Amino acid sequence: MASVFFTLILLYTTAISSSGVSGVPQLEPLNVTVLRGSEARFNVSLSEAWYSMSWMLKTVLILTINSDTGVSEHNPRFSVNNYSSADINCWEFIIRDVWRNDSGDVSCAVQEKPTQTAQLSVQESGTVRIVGGNMTVAQGHQAIIRCEASGWFPKPTVSWVLDGVVVDQNSYNSSSEALDGLYNSISLLTVRGVNSVQVKCLASVSALTTALSSSIYLVVEPPDWTVLIAVVCSIGGFALLVLLILGIVFCCKRRKEAKSSYQKEMGRTRSQIQRSGGAVEQRQGKDNPAYVIDGQTSVTHSEFNDSGYIQTNYTKYLEIPDLVNRNQAANGHASAYNTLGGTGVRKHRHVTIV
Image (cartoon, rainbow, N blue to C red; front, side):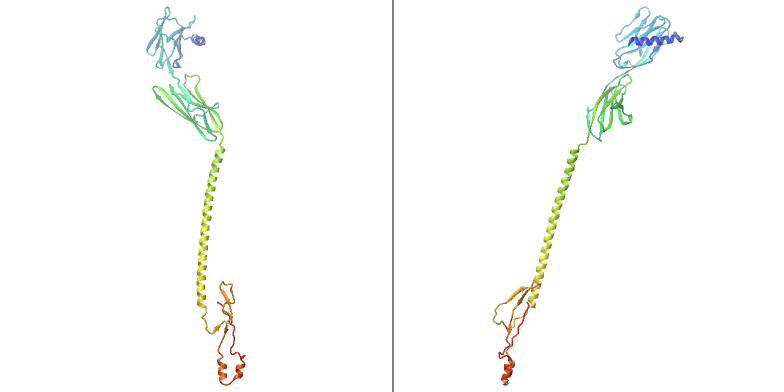
């Protein structure tokens, strides 16, 4: 790594020399961004001879280099490397195990030449995780996946990848808050369950060459038809039970109404019979002492007619005193008397319907 960096320095300084630039030190790079705990490297080159060089971090003098005696001050966190050649002078300044408070100006002064200044930025990489681990969702339903990035500086950039495809920024929401100089970010992604996929959440800052990530698997389950069938059967059974109860209630009501109608009809019929019976009794005649039964003491034939009333057939013989014959006898007309059959009684048959 150092040899590659030195080669780049030589190429750069050679280009400066060929362009005719001399006398003014060249400090590179002008902006360095590194992660906390890593190294920051700066180099200065000049084509003229020199005898004193000073490096400062912000306003603090870190070390001084003399062309004859070398480095006059030494600190394990700071060091220099000499990559000078016969054509150009080149020195590398290294800061190891950088801290957050190291961020600021890095300056190099060569004798009476103008001081050259670069910027050092120190970032912090935190953690990232998807809350809850692997998830299961029913097909067609939505799953909300939460990603947390904690302890970052500056505010991290959070992104999502589904099965290797980067998710559009409009498809998720992210928010951040600062706590004790560090940022904590939360990102929510909504995924509709179509197929099982790998879900990856990434968090990064500019000093990271590779974003930190956390992955889970979103498993999509097909619909559970057994549950649906059980629900349908339960609802169907309940509906049948309700219909059965309603049918029983309806039948009982109809039977009660039929019984009530029958009782009412029987009551009306009984009332009609009673009224009809009273009327018949009122229409019956009175006994006539002039009628006698000829050798009979009871009814000869009884039966119900079509109207339901009793019809009695019987024969009575009416004995009427032969007053005419008596008068004729008194007048001496015996012949008229004999013409009546000699019985003295005329018989008539009557039928009375009750």
